[in-house]
Length: 295
Image (cartoon, rainbow, N blue to C red):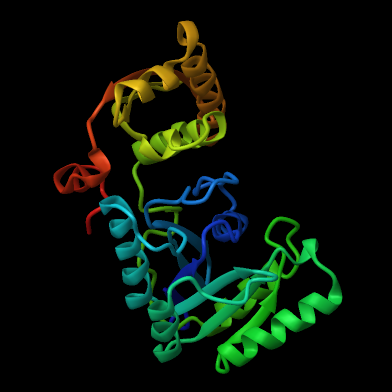
């Protein structure tokens, strides 16, 4: 092993929908985090691992910072706090035009950190030069010790420059994971996320947020992967909405998820979906532990 090999944990935090998952996927090169226009699409900490001969970058993508209104959201915010504690480098991401952090205590915690902090002002492709200059000046005052980078995660503007800067800041260390590993998550996790992404895209209002997906069977052979997944909702009415008239809505979810999974696993996918009511699971501590929301 190269004695100058660098490795470290980089946590990405910020308000919902500022582009954290888009940035991480741009760096890692695979769609590990689900990306939709709805808030709160990222529920778990996802480790994306970026490997090169002389470094390993372990990226933690966190749920957007929110004020929790039920037990599951409290658990999601616990992941954010842990991401701060075990980071070697912290990225605080916001979008151009934002002027405040949603969580004052988190802001104060970040100011007290003794690790390098990078503030990324994202979505600069949607603004003009004058507004951008104001935004950079505003956040430089708020985070006097941080490096500030205006970026566009979706167009790729400055994405490589930020990555190069992070690699420079990494501590000298052997790798934490095998060099051929891209994430710490099992296959079933990505199946669940692909199905949940389709649900977020196809349904409105509260329904997508009341859904949890559990993959009960995952059988992989040389040419095909057979998957059986259960979609859980909190109420009977939600079950009816998910299934739709003559099963049409559920079929759309299945077709969309199957296409995503075939691209992800580069194999033919056979996907069976079922819907079941699991009353008030988001407020039930035992259920949240089962679904991996409790640390």
